[in-house]
Image (tube, rainbow, N blue to C red):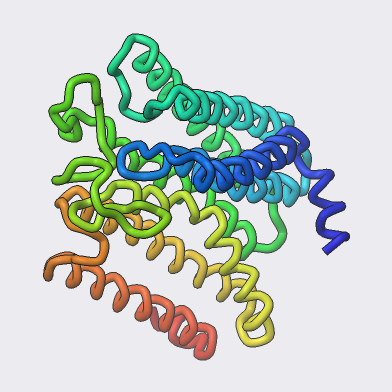
Length: 309
């Protein structure tokens, strides 16, 4: 554990400093959830800074680790990482500042100041998206020896972009709830702030666009973890090429799941109350994923199948 911490200290310095600051903010926000009795849109007012700070801890740590895997130092990728830190700081300053003011940070145009702050957040996210894309391109262009690791990192970065993109419907005109000064919503078919799942707050009475956004964003951790598990527990049974192909299958399934969850939300369905069409689509995804993984493993065991195909 100590060795890992020492290595992490030498990863991308701005990202790791940002991660440290977000870890401290997460603790402060957790205290605020219990110590501050104020409620905003149906949740403790400090819950949003808590969730965002924890998310940035995971995102920043994973991104710094991925940059450390590059066989050659890339100044472009390092600068892109620093830009991400700057945009993350902007995002969190606005979120925490609005909490201190006792108002919402997202979709809030009730005053010129609130509207300007929300627009600033939107601009920061667009710059962060672009910087993340730059890092993804750099990673794909670098020759990482371990093919499975390269696929895991590349797919994780790409699917995280998808996770960011599926949040766009939150600010489209179709998501305007008809409340003066409010220019978007997380929920579909019901007002924001209604009954929700514990901690995450995802709506239990309507669709919630945060679900697909959450799943897509955490591909950055899920795919590398899968690669590590495949190497550790099946490394002797599955060669590197087979592991890489399984990661491609998993990445495709993960992306499809992100889109499926977003589609379900856009149709106004709570996560735990899918209709028959959603269940059918989910079942088809499971069957297709299992079948594709089976073909990959079968080709490893019987090379002639690959020749016949």
